[in-house]
Image: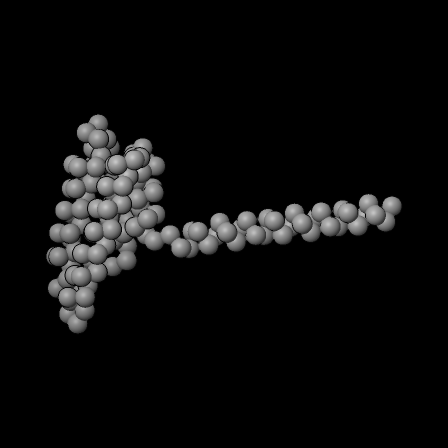
Length: 124
């Protein structure tokens, strides 16, 4: 009887450690994912983008983020209001590129209906 209790405790501990480890792995992936990567993943899932379209979307969003950083650096000492027109124009151009270049024509009306800003702009 003692060996059955011992095996039960050992197995319970093993399952606990396995679950705990899996939780750590999953939670660390969410923390490591950048807003740009998360937006690309969500947009790809929502509009069924894969292959070349997904790669192009990631390139467009990476380019968008690089340009945002340059704008922020250029206006680092200036006020937020001075930077806002440049950021809004960049967002408009990027959304236009996603809509007209990456999304298939039959998905564009749905994209327009979302009426949401780029998720990567939340870092402002």
